Length: 180
Length: 177
Image 1: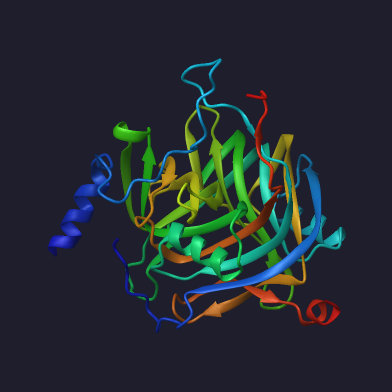
Image 2: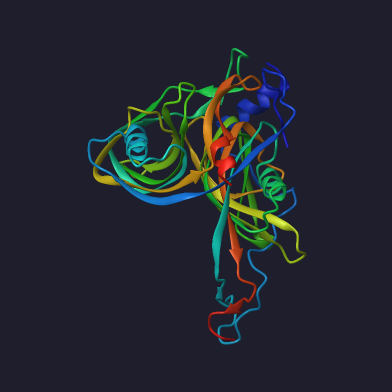
């Protein structure tokens, strides 16, 4: 048995490894000011807009899920989008849960990890760079189900990813719903 | 990030994408006794939809089975499906993702993955094959985004040695634009 096989076998039998993310952690969910009236909560943000073009894509093997979707959007000049459906598989999965300092990453070893559900958005971050934030569920070869946020750089496509993204076209003016 | 060597030569283009216009939104309720995948394909075909993104909002099965991936030992492919997990109902459909497209003979085909909870409270999930997922008394609800101007068509992919959906621009729609 090769070292790699031995490592994989050990990983399959034990619980999946939990460790702090060693990859670039995703940015916080929102960057809006905290509401004055409700300390510690995020001010409600209402963004009016409409849905635009749809993009159907296939991401080929060994491409990272998150950056692959960002590249698909960039190819069509799309800066805001939502995932309408996604079906595919991963070599391995890297899923984050918790937030900030306590964010933890779970890794699930494949190949052949099935992506069961995936939802999320593509939109510019605080620096103006268009980023995908994607969460969902996967299953391994023993039919165990895991969930979390797909960590950038940690989710290589195995056979294929089929995805439908729909462009979101926000109106320019954005104001908090509570008027503050 | 670990990558794997596929059995075939890697295709040069790693991302395939086409734009489509919305071909309308539909809500679909499948009834008790229907098969999930065949029922979806039949209902959408009848509604004039050939390719669509499907989001399963919930439902139940009286009996169903699903598959999960595992490394392929004979080298013909990187990953393959293991033996099906068969669940006796009532099995609740928690959420699911699917696509409707056309197979290599031009017939409707659905590719579907879903998360489920069995009658003992254990969560499951995997690839749902056609013909073996019988809808139970709860029915099943799907929200569907149809595509206009583009389709998903199954083609054999030499790199992975699997038939898979490929996004395809429809020439007719292009001409109409």
